Each structure stands twice: as structure tokens, then as C-alpha cells.
Image (cartoon, rainbow over all chains, first blue to last red; front, top):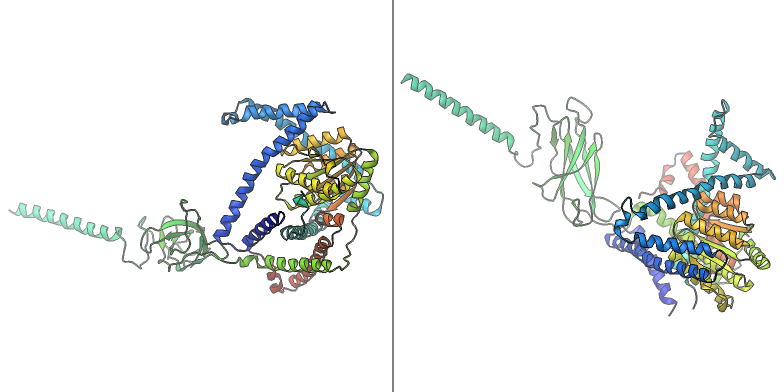
Length: 206
Length: 415
């Protein structure tokens, strides 16, 4: 009985949402929209659990002086600092300390992390594009053609553009669509397994 | 006397003229008898011919708050001196009064879908099962003419969205395959599934971590618990946690979503229980960091470099952070196994990690690791589903090439 109730809830919710997709009645639409609202409400309460988890793990490392405990201290300082500064509605006004920290500390740090991608793409390409086998040589040549399409090459630019566009719109698009079809089938199969109660690994044990 | 009479005649003449103008003005200003088309008096120009045959009907495949209005174009549409430039569609719940403009379409268009709101307080509220009347106004340069009022029509919700019939039929066929192969598996039939290198490498990767005495890092991705990729990852996490418990290797599962964190905790705990080592489970091994993308990546990258994790497993929904994670793991010297259903991130994982599960292999991985017959049955169903799609593609290409539109239209979806 202990596991049957959650399985029944999963079955009911799965069937209702699936039926709602094909039956456009207002009543089912109402249920669906309310369910979406409840996901957001549940997420807000779950955030409290998440914050408690972060706090507990960080404070434990600081107390035990575990390796890298300084980073946990900074995490706690950032967490409570922004919480304290931002709990009032006035904190969102331009010029407030909260907004200054957001604009001049958080956003630049985020942009820095994003910009690392440029360097990581280069290092990953350097490692991956090696002419070791026939297939990897084809990969290397294709990558070269695609990368060079952005560069002015004089009379070669036109040919390169045509070839690059063909690679992107024909074989690349075919592969992407094939993967997307497989993903779609996999999603349906996974959803069916969960709704029918065949896959229960996410439910845990006592 | 004569002067008086002349003066009197002038007054009478003026009086009668005034009466005449008043009479004409009244007739022009007020509406004519019901049933006759109206014309504007904005100018002395001639109004365009009104549209005719205005018919309103329920909009198909909806929730009952929309009507479709069709009409025959005005003869002056796109021709003649009184060219129609647009049509205005007016609606009322009374055939005589209260018509309000609900939409405008350009010349040459003879259909309009009046999508009303379903909330009562909304000014565009269109309740279902209530009669509405329509008029269509043909507007030319500052002048218009209106059609006769349409017959009443009411909106109502449909019990089935026929535009989605191909999706429904495809889902039913695929579900049939899933149920069929699961039943075959239940009866003990051996189902062959091709080996996947990335999944076979999980055992080897966990063994490596155990030998090196370093932890395993498992990233569930940045998706929410509503994403199927995340759910697939959590089922794989359960299998991995079971193996990790058997090998007695530490596992670290930093999460970017608090709901995913709670499910991951249960998943890992269940894995330890299944391995017969419930006491070895540490709740702090699965924790929440942050929901912000790059803040999460910073924290995980730092964790990789400090802890020097021996194995990194990335399974789930990833976005731009995929390459950041994979490259940092490479710098840390970890063996990396990845899997995502995000098509755009697959090339990054292929380039930067040692093994990659592409697309649907992520969904099949839990069945591979658990080796449960019921789950393997679903993989066989996926394979048969792909075969059906391939056959349909070939037939569709041939049908389109030889203009057999009937076959192509079978797969058209109208949302």
C-alpha cells in the first residue's frame, strides 16, 4: 500500500496530462494550468530544502576546516549577504546595494565564466580534431570548412560558403533530425515506463 | 399690405426650406429598416459593395471560446474605383444592436477566427454555448458598407483534437509495441540489445575510482524534475549508486535544482539499500548548490579540481556549461562519461569526454545497467518504432516525389 499510493498518483497525473493534450475541453485545460502553477509553488517550498542543504554542507566544512573550507565560507557570506540585502522590495530599485552587487559583481563573474567557453572550444577542438583514422580525418576536414566560412578568403570564399551551407543544411541537419527522432521515441518510452510504474528507481526505498 | 405679403412669403419660403432640410437630414442620419445594408455618410463618395454570405461557425479543435467567420468578398475587392482596403469583423450578442469591431483583415481575405477570452472579466470574453451574430464591414478610403447580420452561432469545446490525430495514432502504435515487448520479456523471451560502449565503461570507471581512492562525481544536469532527461539521469544514478555502494567508493552529486536534489537523495539511498549497505549512505553526498547556470558550473569545476575526482559522469539536460564541465574534468585527469538529449550539446560532449551516450541512449542506459527484462522490452519497442519511422520516411519521400499527396497529408498535424 505504501508504494501503491505514489504509483497511483503518478498513473493518474500521467494519464490526465496525456488525455489533456488530445482533448481540448476547458475543464481539462483548467486542471493542466493549475498543475503547472502547483509545480512552481512546490518548487518554491523545495528551494527552502535546497538552501538548508547548502547551509548544512557548507557550515559542516567550515567547522571541520575541510580542504577548501574558505570557499564554503565565501558561499555562506554571499548567501546571507544577498539574502539580507535583498529581502525588501526596495532592494530592487536602481542604486541599491543589492542591485550594485548584482550588476557589478555577479553579472561580470557570469560573463567571465561564459567567455571561458571560447578558450575551451579551442582546446577541445585541438584535442578532438586529429587525423588518426579516415573518419577523424573527414571530421577534421569538415570542421575546417565550417570554421573558414566566417573568414574572407577572396575567390575561395564563395566555394567555401556553398560547401559549408550544404554540410550544415543536408548531412548535419539529417543527423540532427535522426537524433531528435530517437530522443522523441526515448522520451515516450521513458514516460510510459514511469506512468505504468515499470521504472521506479526515482522513488527510493525505505 | 403688399410689402407685408412679400415679407410673409419669404418667411414661409424659408420655413418650408428649413423643414425640407430637416426632413432630409433625419432620413439620412437615422438607420434604414432592418435587413438593409448600411453605408457611411462620411463623404459624398460611393461606398464599396458590401460583402455577402456571412457565415459564423464554431472553431474546430479548441476549448469552446472561438468562432470562425467566413464571407464572400465584396465585388469591389481589389477592383474598381471603390477599392476595398480592409474588412472589419463586428460581433454582438444581439442581432440588432451592440456590434463591436473584433478584428480587421486585409483585402482578399475572406475568413477570420474570432478567438475570445475564456475569463469572464476579460473584455474579449466569448462564452461558450451562447449565440453571437456577426457583420462584416468592407472599408474603402474613409467609407464603408456593412453586410447583413449572420445567422446566430455559438462556440463549444470539442472532445477530441482531430488536428493531432497523426500524433495520437503514432502514440497508440508505439505504446502497443512497448506493451508487446514488455509482455514478451515477462514471459522470459531473450531480447537482444546492441552493446553501448559508454554504458559498458561505467563499471570500468567506477573500478578506476576505487583503485585510485578518489570519489566519483555524478552531475544530474541543469534540468528540472519535469524534464525526462533529468528523470532518465536519476534512474541511471540509482544504478550507479548501487555499484558505488558495492565498491565502497565515495560519490558526490551536486544538484542545481532543489526538487532534483530531493529525488537524487532518494535515488542514491535506494541504490545503497539495494547493495545491502544502507549504513554507508551519506546524506551530504547529495546536496544543492545553486540554480544559476554559471555559478553552478564554477562550484562544480572547483570541486573537480580540489577533489581530483577519478570519474565524472554527466547525464541529463545540459546547456552551454557542458563544455566547461567536460574540459575542466579533462584538466583534472578524470575519466568522463556523458549523455544528454540536448542535440546542440552532443558535439561538445563527443569532443571532450571519453564516452558519450547520444540522444535516446540516455533513456536506454538505465535498462542496460539494471538488465531488467521489463526495461529491455521498452528498448526493443524504441527500435521497432525507429524502423517504422524509417519505412514511413522512405514511403513519404516516394509519395512526395510522385505527388501522392494523400500519403503526405496523413502525417500533417494541425495544432
